[in-house]
Length: 116
Length: 131
Image (cartoon, rainbow over all chains, first blue to last red; front, side, top):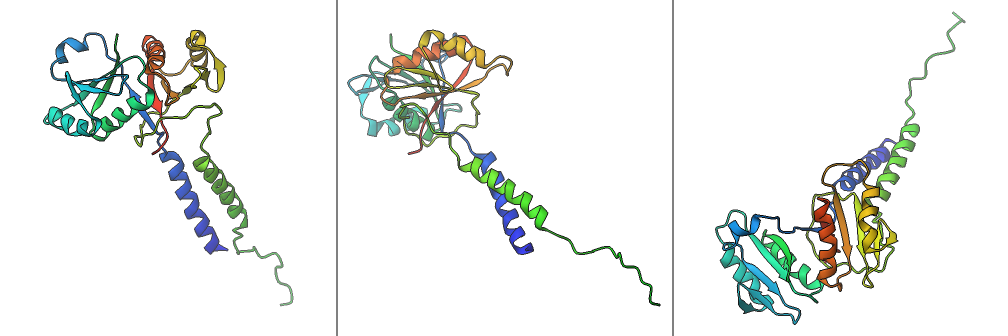
C-alpha cells in the first residue's frame, strides 16, 4: 500500500498548490484621479475610441494593426508607461478590452475616461 | 519455560487510516481547483489572457439587457451601491470588486458603475474569459 500512498501524496500536494495559485482572469480598471491630469498631460498618449470603429492617437487616425507599433515608439524609454483611453458613447466593452489587451501585452497602464 | 507473555505489542504499522484521510483531502483539493464557479446570468465576458493578483471580495455582473447582479442577486443601478455596502460590512479599506460586464455592453454603462466605485474607493477589476 505504501506505493499508492506515495502517489496519492504527490497528487495531493500538486492539487493543493494549483488551487492556491489560481489567479482570476481579469483586467484592472483605473479611473483618472483628480489633479493627475495637468502634470502628465503631454507625456501620456491619448487614445480616442470612436463609435464608428476609428482609433485616434493624439489626433492621428490609425488602424488597430498599426497601434502596437505606434505605442511602442511613443512609450519607449518611459519608466512607467501609461495611456489614456477615451471612449465615446456607443463603444462596446469588447472593443475597449481589445485595446486593453494590447496595453497589457506592452506592460502599459490604462486610464479609462469617458468622452463628454 | 512454558510461560511466555502473550500480549506482545504489534509493531506493524497500518497505513490504511492515513490513506483514507489523504484520499479525502485529495478529492477536496481536486474539486476546489477544478470547480470554476459558472456564471448564472446571461453574460458573455470579453476575452483576455491577462491575469491579476487581486482577489475580489464581491462580484457585480451587468448583463446585456442592463440587469445588475450583486453576488448573483438581481438589483438595479440605484441600489447597487447599498447592496455592495451591505455585503462589505467590516472588511478591509479598499475592497476589490470583480465586474462581470457583457462584451457587447456600451462603455457608458461601465462608467456609471465606476463612478459608484470611485465614490466608495472600491478597486475594480474587469472579469474576462481566456482567449
